[in-house]
Amino acid sequence: MHRILIVDDEQDLLWALEQRLTTEGYSVVTAEDGIRAQALIRRMIPDLIVLDVNMPRMNGYEFYQRIRRMPTVAGVPVLFLTVRNAVEERIRALNAGADDYLGKPFNLDELVARVRALLRRSERYDTNASVANQSMLTIGKLTIDWQLRQLQMAGRIVRLTPAELVILRHLIDHADQVVTAAELLLLLHHGDTAGPGLIRWHIMNLRGKLGGDPHQLPLIETVPRHGYRFNLAALHTEDTDVD
Image (cartoon, rainbow, N blue to C red; front, side, top):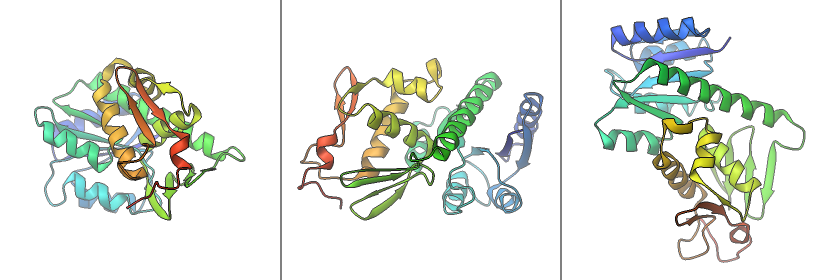
């Protein structure tokens, strides 16, 4: 049974989410703020965290940054709950490394669908990481540890979110081929619940973490009106460097 940690200071919403996810067969633990949630994590490791960004004592972003430094939960997927009309808040959630976000107020059926998608994605990574000879990949200057969910480029180590790893792995598996945003959305199990803007943000974050000289061939190229392409040649270009 999957264990879900919900962190939100709205008592009524916290109760509603707990009731609905429990009826869906999940084990649910709740906390009213980041400090209490951090104490809970020291005693248990959730499979998924549903996290409100606006909370007293410790907001969602601060809590998120803290748990990403904890090895036991660094790879746990996080679904951010944001204010629907605050575009800058959704952008901040994506830039912070959110695996997904949902604006308030939201439909409980949609939340359940996103929870299921994130858990399926996380399970797929755990399975892939356990397969022999698939936990590490080295291409030119890039080394990726799928199990630790991190990449190393020119000696610089960066941790990636589960969503970023899904996208990166698919792009590498189809290197030098064009992959559409719709295809990537299906891989993230979003279908029609999210638009290509979500993929653009994940690609932007991936590019930042991969680094490279903007004047050289990009590792992840945007193909206008078609999608994205991972350029193997960029990994073997001597002039490519990381700041």
